[in-house]
Image (cartoon, rainbow, N blue to C red):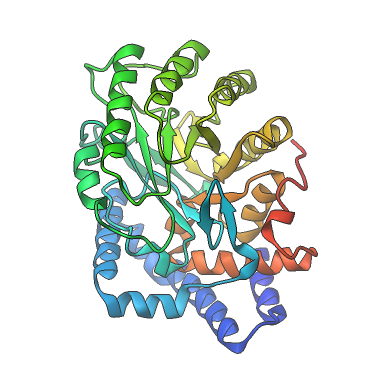
Length: 383
């Protein structure tokens, strides 16, 4: 209820053109209709089935020029206060799609039209993987979360490259790379060789991607190989450094580990110059399973603040976890995140939420006296 009141208050405060007001009102209506009509229907079906259906619908939209043009007209929101150049990459807005949604590389021609400022495909691994035994996805509506047990379900690096090669993108596209989820890859040495091979294959393809994500924090993999111990992580990063990667690298961080473990990971990463930033963070471990959505929010925010306090001059931070409203995104920005990612908030509120977040975030920043998003980064790092 509070979020709805904030939305309508902001609508009447918007001091730009009627065209922008109309777009914002459409975003509000779209979110409302999704939650009242489509969401009850979708949530009556198996979540993975609905996910696959919606991704294919999105892929089809991306192939139809009039469809993209209409979506651009209705949902894409431009605001100069959002434009940032980070590690040489131009971001027109700070709201991105996290890894874990487009793991079949189907949406790279679609998401900009819905208002996203960037996206990450994958996580992609050296070898394809059909996913852990079902159920791989479950809903917990009361806690606004999903139980996730996909285990890097993906099409493999070679097929992913085939879908990315020779394509241009309207927004920055990243590729997330992790360890192949195979029983045979069961030692740190084998895992390092596997990950390095995937990076090497991607690098040789000379793709038009903007950055890499190194995902070391998926809790649903076989083999129990961990890169949280400093030696294992250092060995992995030393091996990757030899590739002289042409794109920036961001490490996907855990949030369910102890603060000491988290700081140890940051300490090792900081010693390797090719690591440009961190994404905070991944799934939250609970008695019910590994969760996305609201259960990740508090811990993600704490670790964003901690990272900014200790490494603000070393790492770019992308905040990820529990973003459902513009105020959620704003909180991560104030704690030190320059960019924000989400998935679960979109699943619960529909694709209209992206445009709504952008409109509301811009107005919240202006309300608090900021002329540019960068002025708000790290303004409140209270843990």
